[in-house]
Length: 475
Ligand SMILES: *Cc1c(COP(=O)(O)O)cnc(C)c1O
Image 1 (cartoon, rainbow, N blue to C red):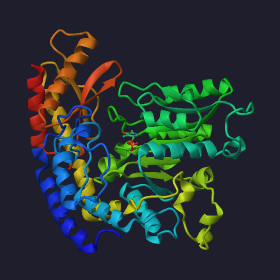
Image 2 (cartoon, rainbow, N blue to C red; image 1 turned 90 degrees about the vertical axis):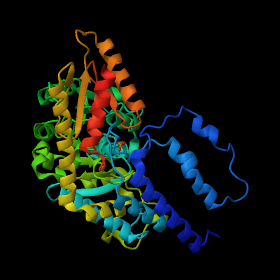
Image 3 (cartoon, protein in one colour; image 1 turned 60 degrees about the vertical axis):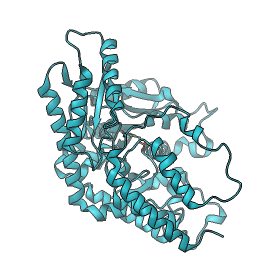
Image 4 (tube, helix red, strand yellow; image 1 turned 180 degrees about the horizontal axis):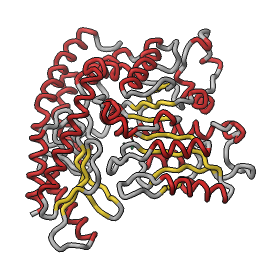
């Protein structure tokens, strides 16, 4: 038997208090733990317990083992990668998801899991100001969403016969090509690896001075490939690149895709959430002509890991790429019901719609827009300080959203390797403080630091602390 509901209630109340204390005091921890690889494993028994352990003992280890080894993503000073927030409504949603343990594979295996997923992805579409005609589905990550989109692109022309005959050993199949900017996320390359397209067939198109894919270079690459007898399949435009959050010109790219009959997938894993802010929607002009879009609510929409939303205007093609129904999964509902297992690789699917529904309801579309707007304003504040400082400090890329790329160049230094190690040392010193956590990237050959604002606890004071630490570390 399981533990009793009374025992559950006892420990759940304690745990609720523990979580409340954690959220209240999270800034007391070092955002980046000072542990060396293997140190945590060394503290833990090598083998599982033979007898049952008490929940009192197990929960005590949250403080002893778990927290000291955690990088605190809910810390206001988390400014690395793309900072995010497990918000209170999202945390509550996760609790209920675990308790109900619904499986959203078929409509029948939990009607509410499927229908809430339909409703909440449609809410998100409206919250983003997108038009009608988009089908939404929740996946775990943008990497998977993008792979699904490219699998659909590969299936769009059934004459290729890949679903049935595969790709290997076929003389009748030309090379299939995918195009994205040189700053696109590595998940595009990984999807090409996984789908059998091959890394060589991902064409990384040059970008302009503001790191946006150049449509003229895209058109030229497609033309050159056709001349070689290759078969262009899809373009991935990025709305908010991972390094510097640049936005590819979606409208111009869509025009090329329409002319060339290519699938257009828009990767808005991070940046897509900015569509919640009406005045930021011009960045996404042309999206209505895309075939698919990914946005990660677990990045910049206050939803706990994991939650990615794949939208497509071609659900029939996506379904053709993935639907395969064995006898034991046939149901009497037939076409009256949506079975999400038909639109992806997974059969079993977590009930992720619940936490997203709770986040959207608890903040409202105005509240979400206000929070995202505030993060963008904080990024402008921070980049303003860097620009005003001089003394070798500079902002390295435009700041359309909530992420700032910047660096420090010592007086007279021109050697990029020296500048890189100087900035890496600055970052290491700042991260050692435990107060803030920054990461870095490369823009071309330039090593730069990043401040990514996405946590709801981050304030001007957090950024002041980061800026003080940075300037001290540069001396
Ligand atoms: C973070 C990111 C991804 C990958 O997201 P996962 O959900 O971690 O797979 C893809 N594309 C862009 C632009 C990203 O910033």
